[in-house]
Length: 58
Image 1: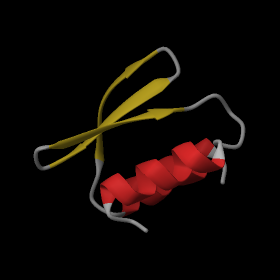
Image 2 (image 1 turned 135 degrees about the vertical axis):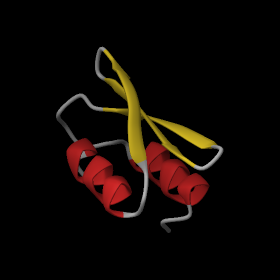
Image 3 (image 1 turned 120 degrees about the vertical axis):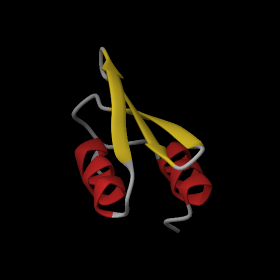
Image 4 (image 1 turned 90 degrees about the vertical axis):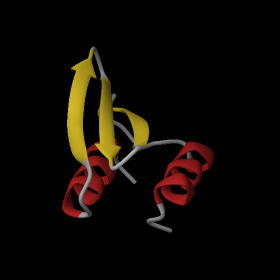
């Protein structure tokens, strides 16, 4: 999955961008914070699964 597709999916599910520092987007939903690296390529499978599991999207 592309990093921009993951960011779009998270924004559609109620997450909002708090800040951007370089290529890292910090998103927040309630008290939960997640950092999404946006390097314009596919995310490694392990990192993608970890982010999806922590955010409850998987």
